[in-house]
Image (cartoon, rainbow, N blue to C red; front, side, top):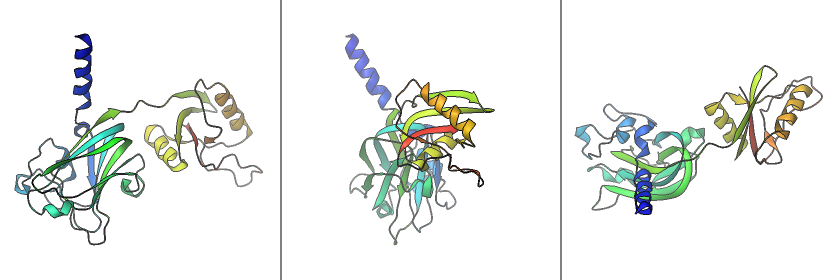
Length: 248
């Protein structure tokens, strides 16, 4: 009996619509078609009832920013009951980079209007991200309209980190593998900026921090791409992948 109760509790928690706790933004807005109407909890498909978004044409997009990084299992989308073809060819993208308004993130699915049903569900199979975009990239794109977007998934635990005070700064080492640009945005979003190593003393401090880190690291670390012009050394590394080192 105890196992049964635990099982149903887990299922109930996983069905929470996390979109309701996010914020919405879109490429443009016509009066009455604000971006947040797709996450107002109202799936009414009638435009005149003021619960649908509406952009202008020209490669429109709509973006949901979640309150953290989520592992997304599925997304339910409700279309309008008129002009339903506007949903045809819309890409659903999930990821963590806001570059190009989030439209460079990996694709979960491409959706089309489904005859006989205004709401459709796509499986994203655990894709991770805090940005969820609906993007119509074709050259002949029309306006983008969404009447409700529901997102189901679980919050991804934060990566391990360690922080020390050194050189009049708080320096945090984060055990998370990201490319440099994603590491930069992660750092600015959660802390302040990537660490700038200003000279040998900073380099020694970093070496000591790395040596005391209690979790596994990659062989290299990301730091800010900055140096003194007069310096004989470049105190940074340009590498394909690495953990994040940031200064606050």
